[in-house]
Image 1 (cartoon, rainbow, N blue to C red):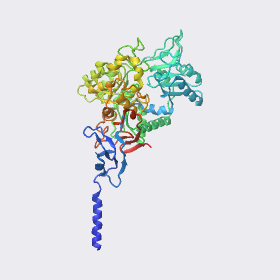
Image 2 (image 1 turned 180 degrees about the vertical axis):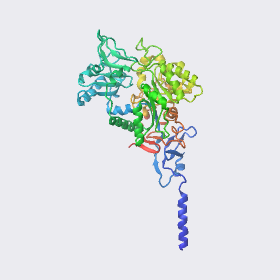
Image 3 (image 1 turned 180 degrees about the horizontal axis):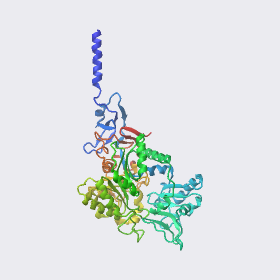
Image 4 (image 1 turned 90 degrees about the horizontal axis):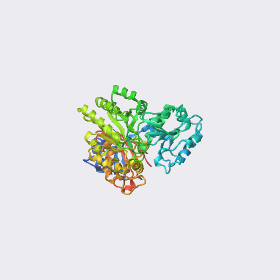
Length: 568
């Protein structure tokens, strides 16, 4: 009897040893609707994860075979999982500072802006700077009666802030609004015999008919005041980054392309990485507004992070302004501002110089271009650089925004292999008034022409340009597939033949976003061996009626197998 018991015990132990999987997963996600963005296996139900990478993809039954004693099982309960969303053009510290400064993104009138500033002034010490961002005059319900050149003037602002300098950045980042005290400190004075016209290369101090400054500074003119604002403390910078990362996680974003920053920002990211505080992967574009920074990086070359957390291998060129302040550089006059075509904000020769250096040293070039003139000038210089170095054929140069194109230039994106880094949400926000700037023909032929770009063979990566627009990718996804405003207008969408399919829109926010940073073999789709970066939604954004997309919420964000956000 004793021997039978021992044999039985040994058999049980042997059965226990053999019953578990040979390669158990750390986590399994089961019972979901999983969109993989893998053409060979577009949809599935479950995913197994080990060591931060995808171990297996399949049915719930197949994936449960990877469950071991220490495996965490996450039941998706029918929710929709996609690869982690990739924000391919935004400004991380701007997102954080928007939460620390006055957020003017949602003000609907000039009076409301004044109220918010007055509240801040009541709490500020005399002489303390009051800063904010997000106002956009074209989105207000009405303009003030005393508007000049399409903008408000500073009198009301100055009246509520007699003791504090004020700097309020436009939503686009291409203009600012300042008060009397800030202008006095910057030496911006009325024109007269003693004060000849104050020219600012690449910008403009807007003035009334008598030469008095209105308080609106366009493009580089904003620097006259911005440079006077005291530098932030290290503590405030850390807080801004913390808040921005929290926002990314809450919005389902696992990777982020920062569209132009300096060494201090890169150092801060590295500090957060060392302390294991990063909850998103960062791809940083070096700002060409800091020439000495670019020269330093030319000497040391790109930094491609083997941990895929902080990579620096691209250079951002700011080549024109925004459409709102009439700063985008056009081939023909603005429809609503005859005699004005906008302007370049940096010498166009810089594109040639940086492109050739970039090709030789391994840096991707990402040029901001909104107007059709700027897009053409940039494409011309990219093409010349590619011809000069024909042996370098995987450059993946980008045009950031690619918003308003001449029909003759659309096919060049595909022909040259230039990525169009768009922000579909700009159509929702800008299209209702952009037709006034460009006219119906230019809008129809070359504005927000996503299908034409895709048909040219171009890659489109998607984003929001936050904090110019809210960071949430859902409205941008909605704009991609409907071409409507966020009020769901007009019926059928603007220029509906240019809508993306839902599959195209999802790919633009995942795999093509990864391609735009040379990471498509590591992330961007749910395939074995790739990063376990996932976004989980409470609704099936690929199937629900259009009018339900905007009410979709992120329920979970996963980075490298670790849950960095879980909704209620």
